Length: 507
Ligand code: B12
Ligand code: SF4
Image (cartoon, rainbow, N blue to C red; front, side, top):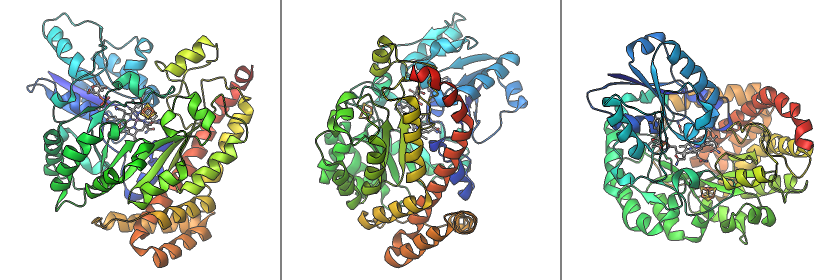
């Protein structure tokens, strides 16, 4: 049996990093961890090939080779997934689908032969057994959560690592909190499930042996759900493992209460964490209460972020506008907050209601849902009928994006961040690709861009005031270039459909 594992294409989004990746000649941020984990659960005798449509084309000869296709994906990959499924069906292949999009939207894919939903650790074995016995059902799902200490080591050998900017592993799944808009707890539960330290180390050894010595993103929902385990097991093990391998740096997602635990931050920095993504959402107390993000209320969020930066971690932040409690003053307040906090990479989105969340159920009951959710919460669309007029919301949203990523404001924010940030002595080895990326930045940002003068000012400032952080300043400036470009593309392609639905939104 030959199985083709296919990962559909992402559209041009904030998180695709498409325009930034071109500077380092990479095709995608990271490989599809779900599919290579599923691959490791398949019978060893099966032939296996991975096609990540973000880095390589799905060719007819791949389809001709395959007996069966396994497809994964997030909602943002919906269009590409539909095309791929249609091609596979035309080629007469059996299609098996799983992963977050199929789990939350199972009714939307009639032509898929088998939906193996939720976590494959639980649903794949019964499917494989039934398939072998010739009695495979259409849907396999569960309400249980898997013990991820039993998850197999991903099949790294299926991945062409040269195409990616980062590798990806996963230390944990689940989050103890209960934010109304978030689909994480529906998909992965409230209890933080953790891999054992030994298991993580073997996965890292596997990656390292495969030749990867660079950045590693850990796809956790909230890594700090269990601080005792982190402090006593995982982080000491990572510190030990990383000796002599300083090129490997980690990034992950955490909640803001990390700021309350200096010892935890210190251990994370010692273990090689360089960046954390935090859901800040909004500086408005009422909106935070409304969405159930209690842990962010009654704190000085700017100071929290600065404490984490000061201890040596870069903070990326998620922000949302369009809560029921938001008034038109929220747009300027978000801009001010983002600027003061020095969060250089700020993902700002309109509130969207994802099927399966508490928000979706509430708005559905209130008759305030329209259209389908695009799956990209930073594309200026929403399926929510907001309390303020949709025109006001969209105009305010665009003002935030155009302000915070304008070269002047963005480069100033890089300076604000670098003044606070305690740069660790990580061995970031600068290779030819990095030097070429710098030269490309000179061309695109220092010559062609309308913010060229500000770019030169940033470079001069970094060279004199923060020379060790110079490469980071260039990297962050390149990210800003991507965010400007992808926002412009998004505005062009989706802006029309947003305004097309303005009437119903305002109704
Ligand atoms: C890492 C990650 C990313 C990376 C992407 C890496 C990559 N190359 O795919 C980055 C940071 C780029 C990213 C971005 C986004 N992400 Co993201 N991301 C994650 C995260 C944290 C981990 C994914 C992962 O690797 N998990 C580990 C693997 C092992 O798990 P898995 O993929 O789910 O696979 C398991 C099962 O789903 C199943 N399975 C998966 N595929 C298949 C296929 C078959 C055939 C079978 C049988 C089973 C199966 O078995 C696997 C083993 O249990 C998840 C949350 C999570 N805990 O999973 C969110 C998540 C996938 N992201 C999500 C979203 C919404 C986004 C964004 C749109 C923005 C945002 N708000 O976060 C962007 C869009 C991306 C883009 N390019 O535009 C949602 C998707 C929801 C949905 N219904 O589609 C998730 C689930 C988080 C959430 N909010 O609930 N993300
Ligand atoms: S803290 Fe983050 S991951 Fe946890 S429920 Fe809230 S938004 Fe979701």
